[in-house]
Image (cartoon, rainbow, N blue to C red; front, side, top):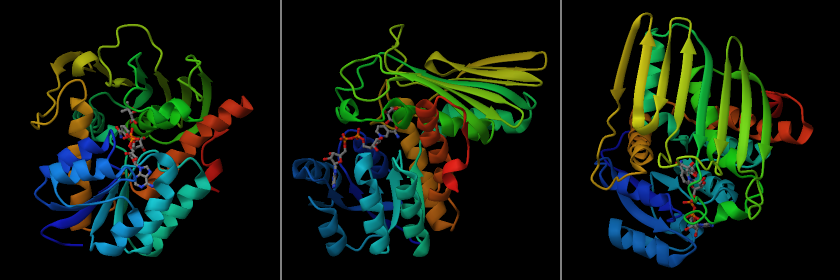
Length: 344
Ligand code: NAD
Ligand code: 89V
């Protein structure tokens, strides 16, 4: 779909959508045609700041506007309905993570879009963070040899519930909220796991789901530990940063606090602080993640313009979801989950 400017609508104008709106507002390849939120005041406020017509109903939005794509940033229970509406109306879509809470739903979403030959990407943004692109580049250069161990970690005691109150009521919590990003990073850096095993707990009694989870991922020739917690009462001033260790046959990469990247390659050791591009509207502590939204958006436009399959396409996300939902299967069974079981 080659166009000079792509006409888009933003559906769901809540907490994280503000980053989408800001990032798109600086992207010369798009025009914001409409905003939509069941809470009409939010849609109106977004339209007043960023442009377009405000809607309180996605059905009305699709009925009234001619769109090239929609950017869906509603909470997970509405993702299926939104993607199916986009498919029905012949409109390409990006949808926030987690794509769905059920593999049947996710497959139906991917099928609805592919049946109509519509581009479809999941806003899985952690791999688009500037330091993560750099790590991938180093791994691909061969500087650390073949990776055989990884640890990808997100631990904090930051009060995530004040900005995202829906997480309190969510039966599935930190695995779908944040471990999903870490699983995607593990796949991006090391490859697809064969099996996973999960140990998880609810530490904070006010929530319904799990807020501490450790997952052991077994790859063909490697092991990766993914661990996430929202109740880690150590220094949490680094929220929302992800820490990474990748060990290879010739060296190791460590991404630690404040984007400090150390690379050991043979006998050489280098240390640098990865600079996160400043977009004017970005600010600490969210700048690393906010910047990744800019990169996700650019990737999406590149895919639309050049008929490429997005890195985090709907199809690819089914594999990520198999691992994510498999992590809960492992909790429930107390057993190892064989990756791919939910895809059959
Ligand atoms: P939020 O509750 O702040 O925002 C969601 C908005 O969607 C709300 O304003 C709500 O009124 C609106 N909405 C709900 N149902 C709707 C419907 N049927 N039609 C139109 N609008 C509807 O939630 P949030 O914390 O911004 O999370 C939104 C999504 O973004 C989630 O999927 C979450 O996992 C994801 N998220 C991703 C990142 C990331 O780094 N990728 C970070 C935070 C949140
Ligand atoms: O991705 C998310 O939904 C967020 C955060 C970036 C903190 O993980 O909750």
